[in-house]
Length: 197
Ligand code: GLN
Image 1 (tube, rainbow, N blue to C red):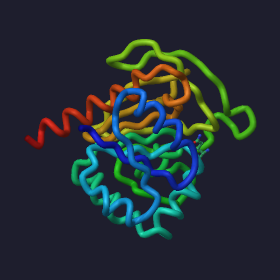
Image 2 (cartoon, rainbow, N blue to C red):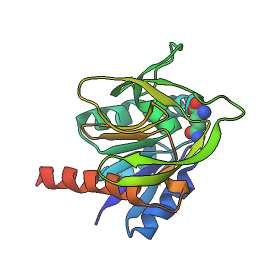
Image 3 (cartoon, rainbow, N blue to C red):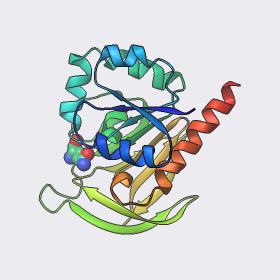
Image 4 (cartoon, rainbow, N blue to C red):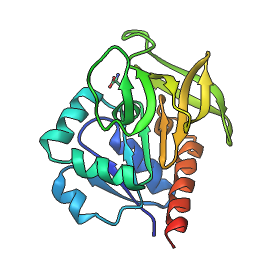
């Protein structure tokens, strides 16, 4: 059975859990190093939305930073939504801060402004079609490296992308009731399992 870890330090982790459980996927919350070690057999990991600065700091404080980064860079399928996207980005525009820095993208935080940054729209997602997107003070991807596939754009800005085992969205697919992007990640997870056989 597929088992997905959800980083549960802060932010919108419960919503991801509900969606995955509704898709009959087993989930475990990763809150500390002990959880990470107990569940060393994860098939995938979700980095949820929330506040990237806080989550990035907690990853270090809880001694989770190095082991998570190493496993992602080995091959663990990972899905970063919103703040999770920021955690995965190699570069944060106008900021020296780096978090996991595993994905070859540069991102601008709070790209839609702090106050008016939350909105809902519909846009095309490569391989899925038109989907609803909920943005909550989300980032945009400003540049992507050569290995990165752009999956969606809203008003000319990149809001979803994939590089090898890493999927990121600026928006929150777990908040719309439309589970196709979550299912898209589960396909990546299934593929990862298949490749290991
Ligand atoms: N604004 C947050 C950040 O920069 C992200 C918001 C979200 O995850 N919904 O970390």
